[in-house]
Image (cartoon, rainbow, N blue to C red; front, side, top):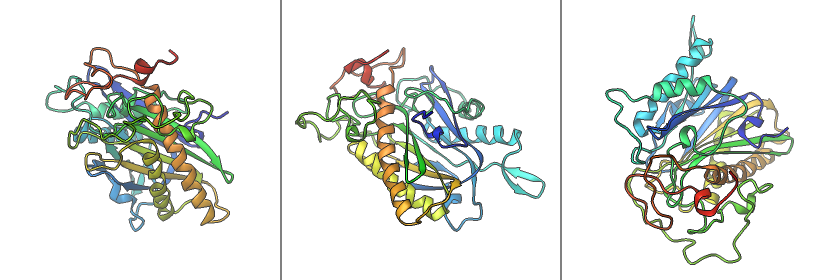
Length: 343
């Protein structure tokens, strides 16, 4: 049975950990065995860890996990917690008698969302990373959880989304923490830019508006340099080289462009990882890779909309009124609070 999530790819588990008082959290993506991985960075202000290892010419061929975290540069500590958890289970790249878990990661900026960031000398992200890895499972929540807990977009609360698809006998899945400078909805209305790709009303079933509103392409009122980033992972069960995985990550970036307006700005640190679990060979290395890239872009666009659609307001944090420029501190309202929706 399909979960419509990245864990529809066998061998992948996802775990979240977060602190409501902090209004921030971490998401860990664990793999049952080492997987081929690559990364594509488009935003002007990224924050990453161990992404150099993903270059095709680097020695290490497989990674053990990925980490997406809030906390800006402080959140890079989350990977240390995941490394600790994996080391306890004997995972990692073998060097003599030692094993070193390989855990690249990326962070988003959520330091000005109204949460209590007075953590003292050391931030809590290492422990959040450990807890997220310990919680990893095939079933996981969407919305205001993990790395998406304190996320925002220009006009609505951001969140954590996922989706999956199948093409040419292969599976593809996506997971994304949406913390964008731009909008995921068309102007200030309820319709999502990703509407043409929606499956079975997975983010409300509203479709495309009868006509584009005058504010459809309006530039967001908020312009806080370095305060945005959307982090994504696309995965497939295909057998890919690191170079092919890199092409998959590049193609998947189109999914962000189809779901967020504007995107890849100097104010964002947008990053897309691609992983291949290596269970199904490509029948045609050119055509099938092109099909995978197309499916990954569509699936990532859907995941972006699902993350915002599922997001919820965080109790106790200031909320900017719908349609107004967001305040420096606090979060915009959640889509469900503005436009309604189940539960």
